[in-house]
Image (cartoon, rainbow, N blue to C red; front, side):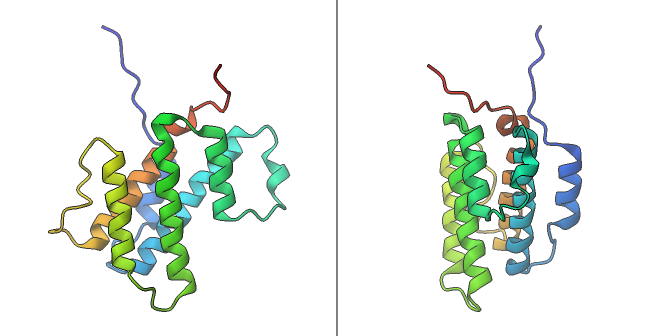
Length: 162
């Protein structure tokens, strides 16, 4: 019997997630910290994928620019949904960071949940209305973080296929 390869997230990344993703029901804090944890993963992927990542040190890349670079390096049809989901998270984060009282925040977060649910063939419980939205948001962020820290994205080649 052959062994199947399992995509396991990096243990250090999991520990950082557990340490920094807030367990309190403060939507702003959850979004901001989750966004930072996702950005760390994007930086880590760039650092491990580029021949000379220090060349980007003074570039002052935005989150969106990092996301585009990682997508360009790691895109595969199977992981295409990841980049759009992270883009939606970035939009939510920008609303929170630039508006004192962002309108329709809960609806944007629920749309984020619906997008992930439609893209992922397993039930992650994000659309369970019996759970608090903050708890479901933590689950969604932890899932995206795990996808980015696992081999499914990190091992994706940027080489073009004929």
